[in-house]
Length: 241
Image (cartoon, rainbow, N blue to C red; front, top):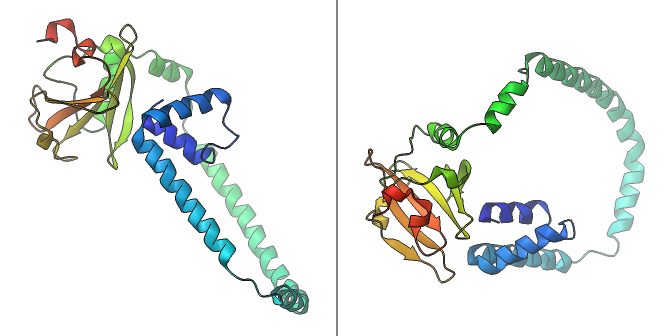
């Protein structure tokens, strides 16, 4: 499980409430144990929730408040409903007509979904998938050392320090290793400060970061986050030094 999936689970399933099935819960627990960033984010959110709940409970409620509210509502209810009934009736009718017209317009202008187009997306080669994702940013995949696209598992857009960039996910089952390749340019990040001479940075949990320049464009680079002994396992054999 990657960080993006883990954070989606925390957001949409109430931060590890009972809605998660056992398999997803196990994967999330494993990710939290291995990813300090996601674990810290979860702790911060839980601490914030706790402070908000404590503050809400600390607000004093006057003993006579309930009675005053009930008396006021009872006195105003009749007049208010009489005036609002006419207004809301007209507004509701207008809303129904407007919404119905909008739905009809959407149905008439919606493109026809074609089965052959859906199948074509699934049958793309790895090269086509990479080209399609990078083309959205006017980029092409030309790293100085060629990656083995036979190991490509996914090509999509991903969040990197608050910016959306192309991300290619490689998986080497034989070595039980994986790599994420973020494609960046000078317009998105000052990535050259990481030293593009294939310098590798390694974390305490075994994750490594390598920086690889583009073979053609000097303003494009590849930030590779990977596991395993070497980045070479994700490269074509002819591109290894």
